[in-house]
Length: 164
Image (cartoon, rainbow, N blue to C red; front, side):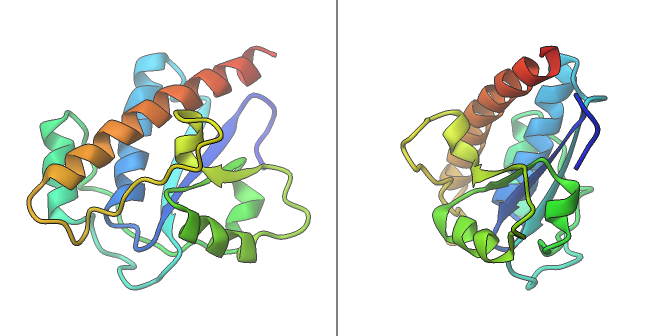
């Protein structure tokens, strides 16, 4: 875990090529805008290892870039049990991945494990839909919209903790 008023956030989806790298890139940009980039470190991972080492899906990269976010430099990796020793927030994009993370979660984890969209839509158990199998880029734009909203909510939460 990180030192006081320094936070580490892990975004997690299935393959780490669509939703979670998009979340990482957007959240990093929003942290920069909020003046919190030096206080919050962000990474992303997938619960599956299929795409380890690969760049984000080209459609994710294109839509992110159209919306002002750079994610092409990110590379997929698989989430591990050790991540719980390094991250204060482990945020899943959907309930399936959240359940997979709960299996990995060690009993000593003191951080927050939950759904990323809870920061935009509290108590609604909302998931970021997986755009991988969708036609066109509409699903990818929806992902960006949802992630932007959740990023703003998480930044509000972190600001409260940083000023405590």
